[in-house]
Image (cartoon, rainbow, N blue to C red; front, side):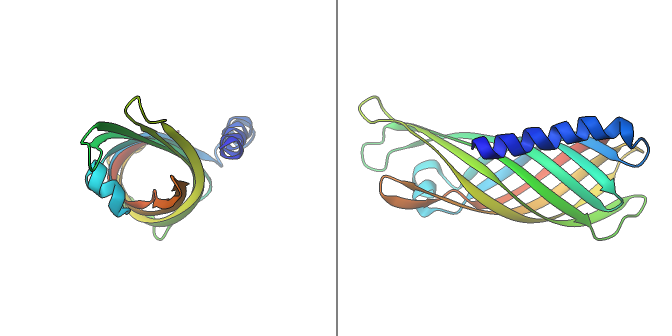
Length: 190
């Protein structure tokens, strides 16, 4: 996780430092998203249901036309019940990812894209007091497709579908943290 945080901090620092030096050549976009995250792992589905709402924030840099470099922070928290005792559990998943998007075409109103990325997926499960809580993190990657729809000159809506691949070993078994994420975002370009 320290490595991903360092990478994200370096990425953000480069944006801040390079923007005044390359005025007019670089575009910066900030925004947020609301997504539905579908768990791939059958054990997670049994305990927490099929998925839940994931909120996200991003900072993106477009150094050249049609290419976007992104840093994202996402967050989902959902509750479930242990399969046998039915005691309450809480799952928190907080991915920090860096990615690249390539706009397949760029018109006045529509910009479809494809993208890839990698990052750190931090997991926390809060168990009843008699069982120790779990806090782990692992690396993962994603592939995505989507489209930007321009509302105004500097405001865009982002429709996105992403497949995430990440797994972690918990209680001596492999657990898939990945799955599908579909959502809508809004961004403002400077």
